[in-house]
View (spheres, helix red, strand yellow):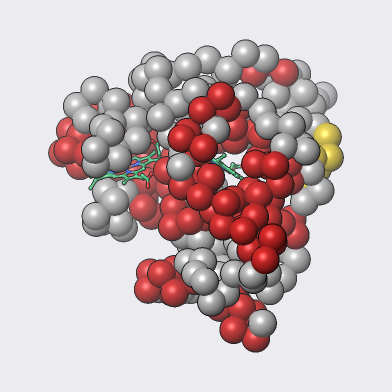
Length: 270
Ligand code: HEC
Ligand code: HEC
């Protein structure tokens, strides 16, 4: 147990959201037989881990895209600057302004099924949902209860899509394809088109995408893009077509949508 606590502590982020762990730490913290408990709980945790990595194969009826959870939540959900899910179990229930209601962790997971995977929701009592929650609870052990670490720096909400296209061709197309459609073997997920995340996904917002790209892409040379190149390429990628999200205009009904929301939402408060 002490081992789990020490390792989980490494997953914490400094207050400004900058990682204080090295990449080798993520490898160290990846679930392995020594840390996962035995018995039914351990099997549930390992199944949840497998679902995050092979979402479509595990749940074909619930995934409409070619993405898997770990396409974005890199390193098994433990990547320090890749939308980390460490500690997430303790951050819910939580008020979320996009839905203007208090949501459970299961609601938040279903948001990613509906939007990020362009799929359909799981029933709360579906064994797959239970296993995903078991895995997220496992990688939350020892992480103090705290608000979501800031994932997106305040800053520009639009970029230069023409300059972004140049960055895309030079830095992204070799893996994600000239048409942004990705590839099956090796697995490079699509960035736009029918098999990508839909317009209602968090990744469809330029600030979210540029922060993700800045820290994690190109996958084999993370951190090499300038802030401006990351912003511009994110703006270019987000200007490309992708699936719609039915009901998106009902998001942020109190008028507090983030400035980079790419569609019209609820009224502004007076
Ligand atoms: C296209 C990228 C993408 C994919 C694929 C994806 N997510 Fe997410 N997820 C995000 C983004 C972006 C956020 C944060 C959104 C925001 O800024 O609020 C997020 C947030 C979350 C959160 C809340 C995190 C927190 O700290 O509050 C959970 C839990 C989560 N995702 C689980 C999943 C699961 C489980 C899957 C697979 C079924 C999945 N996600 C697939 C992009 C993705
Ligand atoms: C060396 C290959 C490679 C290069 C080059 C690369 N990526 Fe990726 N990208 C990946 C891999 C691998 C993943 C995660 C796949 C996984 O683990 O399932 C990913 C995931 C992503 C995601 C989240 C998932 C999705 O499909 O939306 C985005 C956004 C992204 N890359 C954008 C970019 C951008 C923009 C560039 C250029 C600046 C780029 N990538 C360059 C390999 C690459």
